[in-house]
Length: 420
Image (cartoon, rainbow, N blue to C red; front, side, top):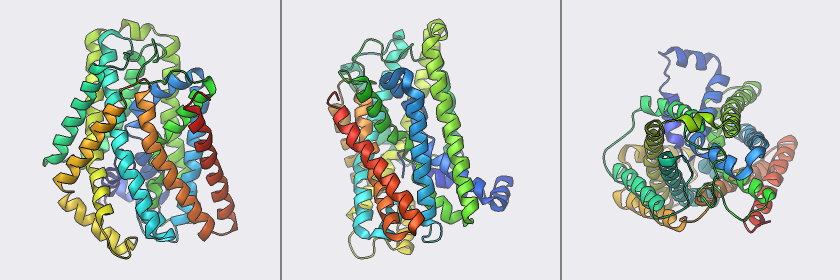
Protein backbone atom coordinates (compact mmCIF):
# COMPACT_ATOMS: atom_id res chain seq x y z
CA UNK A 1 0.00 0.00 0.00
CA UNK A 2 2.81 2.33 -0.80
CA UNK A 3 2.12 5.96 -1.66
CA UNK A 4 2.59 5.09 -5.26
CA UNK A 5 -0.36 2.70 -5.18
CA UNK A 6 0.26 -0.99 -4.58
CA UNK A 7 -2.96 -1.72 -6.45
CA UNK A 8 -1.39 -0.10 -9.52
CA UNK A 9 1.59 -2.43 -9.36
CA UNK A 10 -0.66 -5.46 -8.98
CA UNK A 11 -2.65 -4.48 -12.05
CA UNK A 12 0.56 -4.20 -14.02
CA UNK A 13 1.89 -7.53 -12.82
CA UNK A 14 -1.42 -9.33 -13.18
CA UNK A 15 -1.77 -8.16 -16.77
CA UNK A 16 1.11 -10.40 -17.78
CA UNK A 17 -1.16 -13.31 -18.50
CA UNK A 18 -0.28 -16.81 -19.63
CA UNK A 19 -0.68 -15.78 -23.25
CA UNK A 20 2.18 -13.32 -23.08
CA UNK A 21 5.89 -13.97 -23.18
CA UNK A 22 6.34 -12.19 -19.83
CA UNK A 23 3.56 -14.26 -18.30
CA UNK A 24 5.04 -17.54 -19.50
CA UNK A 25 8.49 -16.56 -18.25
CA UNK A 26 7.33 -15.54 -14.77
CA UNK A 27 5.25 -18.71 -14.55
CA UNK A 28 8.31 -20.84 -15.25
CA UNK A 29 10.53 -18.68 -13.04
CA UNK A 30 8.44 -17.34 -10.15
CA UNK A 31 11.48 -15.60 -8.70
CA UNK A 32 11.27 -13.14 -11.60
CA UNK A 33 7.64 -12.43 -10.76
CA UNK A 34 8.59 -11.78 -7.14
CA UNK A 35 11.48 -9.52 -8.18
CA UNK A 36 9.27 -7.54 -10.58
CA UNK A 37 6.54 -7.14 -7.98
CA UNK A 38 8.98 -6.00 -5.30
CA UNK A 39 10.83 -3.54 -7.53
CA UNK A 40 7.56 -2.26 -8.94
CA UNK A 41 6.21 -1.72 -5.44
CA UNK A 42 9.19 0.32 -4.27
CA UNK A 43 10.14 2.31 -7.36
CA UNK A 44 7.73 5.16 -7.98
CA UNK A 45 7.45 8.83 -7.02
CA UNK A 46 10.38 8.36 -4.65
CA UNK A 47 12.73 8.22 -7.64
CA UNK A 48 11.87 11.85 -8.38
CA UNK A 49 11.51 13.16 -4.85
CA UNK A 50 14.14 11.50 -2.70
CA UNK A 51 17.53 11.95 -4.45
CA UNK A 52 17.42 15.79 -4.25
CA UNK A 53 16.05 15.68 -0.69
CA UNK A 54 18.72 13.26 0.56
CA UNK A 55 21.42 15.24 -1.24
CA UNK A 56 20.17 18.45 0.40
CA UNK A 57 20.21 16.88 3.86
CA UNK A 58 23.17 14.49 3.76
CA UNK A 59 25.38 16.14 1.17
CA UNK A 60 28.44 14.02 0.47
CA UNK A 61 27.16 11.26 2.78
CA UNK A 62 24.16 10.47 0.55
CA UNK A 63 25.41 7.11 -0.73
CA UNK A 64 25.88 5.54 2.73
CA UNK A 65 22.39 6.73 3.71
CA UNK A 66 20.89 5.15 0.58
CA UNK A 67 22.86 1.92 1.09
CA UNK A 68 21.67 1.61 4.70
CA UNK A 69 18.07 2.16 3.59
CA UNK A 70 18.25 -0.48 0.85
CA UNK A 71 19.85 -2.99 3.22
CA UNK A 72 17.10 -2.45 5.79
CA UNK A 73 14.36 -2.52 3.13
CA UNK A 74 15.63 -5.76 1.64
CA UNK A 75 15.79 -7.31 5.10
CA UNK A 76 12.18 -6.28 5.77
CA UNK A 77 11.07 -7.78 2.45
CA UNK A 78 12.86 -11.06 3.13
CA UNK A 79 11.37 -11.22 6.62
CA UNK A 80 7.86 -10.59 5.28
CA UNK A 81 8.36 -13.14 2.51
CA UNK A 82 9.31 -15.90 4.94
CA UNK A 83 6.44 -14.91 7.22
CA UNK A 84 3.67 -15.03 4.60
CA UNK A 85 4.94 -17.61 2.08
CA UNK A 86 3.33 -20.70 3.58
CA UNK A 87 0.91 -19.04 5.99
CA UNK A 88 -1.25 -16.54 4.10
CA UNK A 89 -3.03 -15.89 0.86
CA UNK A 90 -2.18 -12.71 -1.11
CA UNK A 91 -2.97 -9.68 1.06
CA UNK A 92 -1.96 -6.12 1.78
CA UNK A 93 0.43 -5.42 4.65
CA UNK A 94 -2.56 -4.49 6.81
CA UNK A 95 -4.37 -7.69 5.87
CA UNK A 96 -1.28 -9.79 6.56
CA UNK A 97 -0.61 -8.39 10.06
CA UNK A 98 -4.35 -8.54 10.77
CA UNK A 99 -4.46 -12.23 9.89
CA UNK A 100 -1.47 -12.90 12.14
CA UNK A 101 -2.11 -10.57 15.08
CA UNK A 102 -5.83 -9.85 14.94
CA UNK A 103 -8.22 -7.21 13.56
CA UNK A 104 -6.75 -4.50 15.80
CA UNK A 105 -3.43 -4.75 13.94
CA UNK A 106 -5.12 -4.40 10.56
CA UNK A 107 -7.02 -1.34 11.76
CA UNK A 108 -3.83 0.15 13.22
CA UNK A 109 -1.89 -0.22 9.96
CA UNK A 110 -4.81 1.04 7.86
CA UNK A 111 -5.25 3.98 10.24
CA UNK A 112 -1.65 5.19 10.13
CA UNK A 113 -1.46 4.76 6.37
CA UNK A 114 -4.73 6.64 5.81
CA UNK A 115 -3.29 9.68 7.60
CA UNK A 116 0.21 9.20 6.20
CA UNK A 117 -1.01 9.17 2.60
CA UNK A 118 -2.39 12.69 2.99
CA UNK A 119 0.89 14.00 4.40
CA UNK A 120 2.77 12.20 1.64
CA UNK A 121 0.75 13.87 -1.11
CA UNK A 122 1.37 17.28 0.48
CA UNK A 123 5.11 16.51 0.41
CA UNK A 124 4.94 15.47 -3.25
CA UNK A 125 3.05 18.67 -4.11
CA UNK A 126 5.59 20.85 -2.29
CA UNK A 127 8.42 19.07 -4.10
CA UNK A 128 6.77 19.60 -7.50
CA UNK A 129 6.21 23.27 -6.68
CA UNK A 130 9.85 23.64 -5.65
CA UNK A 131 10.96 21.96 -8.88
CA UNK A 132 8.90 24.39 -10.97
CA UNK A 133 10.22 27.43 -9.13
CA UNK A 134 13.79 26.14 -9.34
CA UNK A 135 13.44 25.84 -13.12
CA UNK A 136 12.75 29.57 -13.36
CA UNK A 137 16.23 30.81 -12.39
CA UNK A 138 18.23 27.72 -11.47
CA UNK A 139 18.21 28.24 -7.69
CA UNK A 140 16.11 26.44 -5.09
CA UNK A 141 13.60 28.99 -3.70
CA UNK A 142 12.84 29.85 -0.11
CA UNK A 143 9.53 28.60 1.28
CA UNK A 144 6.86 31.14 0.44
CA UNK A 145 3.41 31.95 -0.87
CA UNK A 146 4.27 31.08 -4.46
CA UNK A 147 5.33 27.56 -3.52
CA UNK A 148 2.28 27.04 -1.32
CA UNK A 149 -0.12 28.19 -4.04
CA UNK A 150 1.52 25.92 -6.61
CA UNK A 151 1.37 22.97 -4.20
CA UNK A 152 -2.30 23.62 -3.42
CA UNK A 153 -3.08 23.98 -7.13
CA UNK A 154 -1.44 20.64 -7.89
CA UNK A 155 -3.38 18.96 -5.09
CA UNK A 156 -6.62 20.54 -6.32
CA UNK A 157 -6.04 19.12 -9.80
CA UNK A 158 -5.36 15.66 -8.37
CA UNK A 159 -8.43 15.71 -6.12
CA UNK A 160 -10.76 16.98 -8.87
CA UNK A 161 -9.45 14.23 -11.16
CA UNK A 162 -9.93 11.66 -8.39
CA UNK A 163 -13.54 12.79 -7.97
CA UNK A 164 -14.20 12.23 -11.68
CA UNK A 165 -14.23 9.14 -13.85
CA UNK A 166 -10.60 9.44 -14.98
CA UNK A 167 -8.71 6.17 -14.59
CA UNK A 168 -5.14 5.39 -15.61
CA UNK A 169 -4.89 2.34 -17.84
CA UNK A 170 -2.66 -0.64 -16.95
CA UNK A 171 -0.27 0.31 -19.76
CA UNK A 172 0.10 3.83 -18.37
CA UNK A 173 0.71 2.43 -14.90
CA UNK A 174 3.42 0.15 -16.28
CA UNK A 175 5.13 3.00 -18.13
CA UNK A 176 4.86 5.58 -15.34
CA UNK A 177 7.78 4.30 -13.20
CA UNK A 178 10.00 4.29 -16.29
CA UNK A 179 9.01 7.89 -17.02
CA UNK A 180 9.66 8.84 -13.39
CA UNK A 181 13.11 7.24 -13.47
CA UNK A 182 14.07 8.94 -16.74
CA UNK A 183 12.89 12.33 -15.48
CA UNK A 184 14.76 11.85 -12.20
CA UNK A 185 17.97 11.28 -14.16
CA UNK A 186 17.42 14.33 -16.38
CA UNK A 187 16.42 16.53 -13.45
CA UNK A 188 19.59 15.62 -11.58
CA UNK A 189 21.70 16.86 -14.49
CA UNK A 190 19.75 19.85 -15.79
CA UNK A 191 17.24 21.08 -13.18
CA UNK A 192 18.69 20.88 -9.69
CA UNK A 193 21.64 23.22 -9.05
CA UNK A 194 24.90 22.12 -7.50
CA UNK A 195 23.97 21.23 -3.93
CA UNK A 196 20.17 21.48 -4.00
CA UNK A 197 20.06 23.34 -0.69
CA UNK A 198 21.55 26.50 -2.21
CA UNK A 199 20.62 29.59 -0.20
CA UNK A 200 18.88 27.96 2.80
CA UNK A 201 16.24 27.85 4.09
CA UNK A 202 14.55 25.83 1.35
CA UNK A 203 11.65 23.36 1.23
CA UNK A 204 14.15 20.53 0.76
CA UNK A 205 16.30 20.89 3.87
CA UNK A 206 15.71 21.74 7.52
CA UNK A 207 17.95 24.49 8.83
CA UNK A 208 19.66 24.34 12.20
CA UNK A 209 20.33 20.60 12.25
CA UNK A 210 23.70 19.17 13.07
CA UNK A 211 25.29 17.08 10.28
CA UNK A 212 24.44 13.91 12.18
CA UNK A 213 20.88 15.05 12.74
CA UNK A 214 20.46 15.87 9.06
CA UNK A 215 21.69 12.41 8.07
CA UNK A 216 19.27 10.72 10.47
CA UNK A 217 16.41 12.84 9.12
CA UNK A 218 17.37 11.83 5.58
CA UNK A 219 17.43 8.16 6.58
CA UNK A 220 14.05 8.45 8.33
CA UNK A 221 12.46 10.30 5.39
CA UNK A 222 13.74 7.59 3.06
CA UNK A 223 11.09 5.29 4.48
CA UNK A 224 8.78 7.19 2.11
CA UNK A 225 10.82 5.91 -0.83
CA UNK A 226 10.77 2.48 0.77
CA UNK A 227 7.04 2.18 1.29
CA UNK A 228 6.55 -0.72 -1.08
CA UNK A 229 8.98 -3.22 0.38
CA UNK A 230 5.81 -4.85 1.74
CA UNK A 231 4.63 -5.66 -1.80
CA UNK A 232 5.91 -9.19 -1.13
CA UNK A 233 2.86 -9.89 1.06
CA UNK A 234 0.90 -10.02 -2.18
CA UNK A 235 3.38 -11.25 -4.80
CA UNK A 236 5.04 -14.03 -2.77
CA UNK A 237 1.83 -15.98 -2.00
CA UNK A 238 0.73 -15.40 -5.60
CA UNK A 239 3.98 -16.81 -6.99
CA UNK A 240 3.73 -19.89 -4.74
CA UNK A 241 7.46 -20.49 -5.05
CA UNK A 242 9.70 -22.56 -2.82
CA UNK A 243 11.84 -21.06 -0.11
CA UNK A 244 14.99 -20.76 -2.26
CA UNK A 245 13.21 -19.23 -5.24
CA UNK A 246 11.38 -16.82 -2.95
CA UNK A 247 14.67 -15.69 -1.41
CA UNK A 248 16.19 -15.37 -4.89
CA UNK A 249 13.25 -13.26 -6.05
CA UNK A 250 13.58 -10.93 -3.07
CA UNK A 251 17.33 -10.64 -3.66
CA UNK A 252 16.81 -9.83 -7.35
CA UNK A 253 14.15 -7.24 -6.56
CA UNK A 254 16.34 -5.62 -3.91
CA UNK A 255 19.26 -5.55 -6.33
CA UNK A 256 17.09 -3.82 -8.95
CA UNK A 257 16.04 -1.18 -6.42
CA UNK A 258 19.68 -0.72 -5.38
CA UNK A 259 20.82 -0.20 -8.98
CA UNK A 260 18.18 2.47 -9.57
CA UNK A 261 18.45 4.40 -6.32
CA UNK A 262 22.22 4.20 -5.90
CA UNK A 263 22.60 5.11 -9.57
CA UNK A 264 20.39 8.19 -9.16
CA UNK A 265 22.22 9.16 -5.98
CA UNK A 266 25.58 8.85 -7.75
CA UNK A 267 24.39 11.00 -10.67
CA UNK A 268 23.10 13.59 -8.19
CA UNK A 269 26.47 13.56 -6.42
CA UNK A 270 28.45 13.91 -9.67
CA UNK A 271 26.19 16.67 -11.00
CA UNK A 272 26.66 18.64 -7.78
CA UNK A 273 30.43 18.59 -8.35
CA UNK A 274 30.32 19.31 -12.08
CA UNK A 275 27.53 21.87 -12.38
CA UNK A 276 28.36 22.97 -15.93
CA UNK A 277 25.53 20.90 -17.44
CA UNK A 278 22.92 22.52 -15.21
CA UNK A 279 24.39 25.96 -15.80
CA UNK A 280 24.29 25.49 -19.57
CA UNK A 281 20.70 24.23 -19.63
CA UNK A 282 18.32 26.72 -21.19
CA UNK A 283 15.37 28.01 -19.21
CA UNK A 284 12.88 26.42 -21.65
CA UNK A 285 14.56 23.03 -21.19
CA UNK A 286 14.40 23.35 -17.40
CA UNK A 287 10.74 24.34 -17.63
CA UNK A 288 9.92 21.36 -19.85
CA UNK A 289 11.60 18.95 -17.44
CA UNK A 290 10.04 20.58 -14.39
CA UNK A 291 6.60 20.60 -16.02
CA UNK A 292 6.88 16.94 -16.96
CA UNK A 293 8.01 16.14 -13.41
CA UNK A 294 5.01 17.98 -11.97
CA UNK A 295 2.65 16.16 -14.35
CA UNK A 296 3.98 12.72 -13.41
CA UNK A 297 3.85 13.55 -9.71
CA UNK A 298 0.28 14.83 -10.09
CA UNK A 299 -0.67 11.46 -11.55
CA UNK A 300 0.81 9.78 -8.47
CA UNK A 301 -1.23 12.11 -6.24
CA UNK A 302 -4.35 11.16 -8.19
CA UNK A 303 -3.93 7.43 -7.60
CA UNK A 304 -2.74 7.95 -4.03
CA UNK A 305 -5.71 10.13 -3.06
CA UNK A 306 -8.01 7.35 -4.24
CA UNK A 307 -5.92 4.78 -2.37
CA UNK A 308 -6.15 6.81 0.83
CA UNK A 309 -9.92 7.11 0.34
CA UNK A 310 -10.22 3.33 -0.09
CA UNK A 311 -8.26 2.79 3.12
CA UNK A 312 -10.46 5.30 4.95
CA UNK A 313 -13.54 3.50 3.63
CA UNK A 314 -12.23 0.20 4.98
CA UNK A 315 -11.69 1.80 8.37
CA UNK A 316 -15.34 2.81 8.53
CA UNK A 317 -16.48 -0.80 8.25
CA UNK A 318 -17.42 -2.58 11.45
CA UNK A 319 -18.05 -6.18 12.31
CA UNK A 320 -16.07 -9.32 13.13
CA UNK A 321 -13.38 -10.97 11.06
CA UNK A 322 -12.13 -7.88 9.20
CA UNK A 323 -8.88 -9.74 8.73
CA UNK A 324 -10.58 -12.75 7.15
CA UNK A 325 -8.74 -13.13 3.89
CA UNK A 326 -11.56 -14.37 1.70
CA UNK A 327 -13.90 -11.60 2.72
CA UNK A 328 -11.13 -9.00 2.64
CA UNK A 329 -10.35 -9.97 -0.94
CA UNK A 330 -14.01 -9.70 -1.90
CA UNK A 331 -14.26 -6.31 -0.20
CA UNK A 332 -11.23 -5.00 -2.03
CA UNK A 333 -12.53 -6.25 -5.37
CA UNK A 334 -15.89 -4.59 -4.75
CA UNK A 335 -14.25 -1.33 -3.77
CA UNK A 336 -12.06 -1.37 -6.86
CA UNK A 337 -15.18 -1.65 -9.02
CA UNK A 338 -17.25 0.99 -7.19
CA UNK A 339 -14.49 3.25 -5.94
CA UNK A 340 -14.64 5.25 -2.70
CA UNK A 341 -17.40 7.80 -2.16
CA UNK A 342 -16.90 11.40 -3.27
CA UNK A 343 -17.31 12.66 0.28
CA UNK A 344 -14.41 10.46 1.42
CA UNK A 345 -12.24 11.57 -1.50
CA UNK A 346 -13.07 15.19 -0.74
CA UNK A 347 -12.15 14.72 2.92
CA UNK A 348 -8.83 13.15 1.93
CA UNK A 349 -8.16 16.04 -0.43
CA UNK A 350 -8.93 18.57 2.30
CA UNK A 351 -6.50 16.79 4.63
CA UNK A 352 -3.81 16.89 1.94
CA UNK A 353 -4.28 20.64 1.54
CA UNK A 354 -4.22 21.13 5.32
CA UNK A 355 -0.89 19.30 5.53
CA UNK A 356 0.45 21.40 2.64
CA UNK A 357 -0.45 24.60 4.51
CA UNK A 358 1.06 23.27 7.74
CA UNK A 359 4.26 22.44 5.85
CA UNK A 360 4.86 25.98 4.60
CA UNK A 361 8.29 26.28 6.22
CA UNK A 362 11.89 25.29 5.64
CA UNK A 363 12.27 21.55 5.19
CA UNK A 364 8.62 21.14 4.19
CA UNK A 365 9.31 18.12 1.99
CA UNK A 366 11.35 15.89 4.35
CA UNK A 367 9.23 16.84 7.37
CA UNK A 368 5.98 15.95 5.58
CA UNK A 369 7.58 12.74 4.34
CA UNK A 370 7.95 11.66 7.95
CA UNK A 371 4.21 10.87 7.83
CA UNK A 372 4.42 7.98 5.36
CA UNK A 373 7.80 7.06 6.85
CA UNK A 374 6.19 6.65 10.28
CA UNK A 375 3.40 4.59 8.74
CA UNK A 376 5.90 2.27 7.05
CA UNK A 377 7.85 1.91 10.28
CA UNK A 378 4.63 1.07 12.17
CA UNK A 379 3.54 -1.54 9.64
CA UNK A 380 6.96 -3.15 9.41
CA UNK A 381 7.35 -3.19 13.19
CA UNK A 382 3.97 -4.93 13.63
CA UNK A 383 5.00 -7.46 10.98
CA UNK A 384 8.22 -8.10 12.92
CA UNK A 385 6.19 -8.58 16.10
CA UNK A 386 4.01 -11.09 14.23
CA UNK A 387 7.14 -12.95 13.12
CA UNK A 388 8.44 -13.06 16.69
CA UNK A 389 5.13 -14.49 17.88
CA UNK A 390 4.41 -16.90 15.01
CA UNK A 391 7.77 -17.86 13.54
CA UNK A 392 10.34 -20.51 14.29
CA UNK A 393 13.60 -19.83 16.15
CA UNK A 394 15.50 -18.50 13.10
CA UNK A 395 12.64 -16.27 11.96
CA UNK A 396 12.14 -14.98 15.49
CA UNK A 397 15.79 -14.01 15.78
CA UNK A 398 15.77 -12.21 12.43
CA UNK A 399 12.52 -10.44 13.29
CA UNK A 400 13.89 -9.31 16.66
CA UNK A 401 16.97 -7.86 14.93
CA UNK A 402 14.83 -5.98 12.36
CA UNK A 403 12.54 -4.71 15.11
CA UNK A 404 15.54 -3.44 17.07
CA UNK A 405 16.85 -1.55 14.04
CA UNK A 406 13.43 0.01 13.38
CA UNK A 407 13.00 1.14 16.97
CA UNK A 408 16.56 2.49 17.08
CA UNK A 409 16.02 4.43 13.86
CA UNK A 410 12.92 6.08 15.30
CA UNK A 411 14.62 6.80 18.61
CA UNK A 412 17.60 8.49 16.95
CA UNK A 413 15.64 10.36 14.27
CA UNK A 414 13.21 12.11 16.62
CA UNK A 415 15.87 13.95 18.69
CA UNK A 416 17.59 14.88 15.41
CA UNK A 417 14.63 17.10 14.58
CA UNK A 418 15.54 19.30 17.55
CA UNK A 419 19.11 19.86 16.47
CA UNK A 420 20.66 16.71 17.91
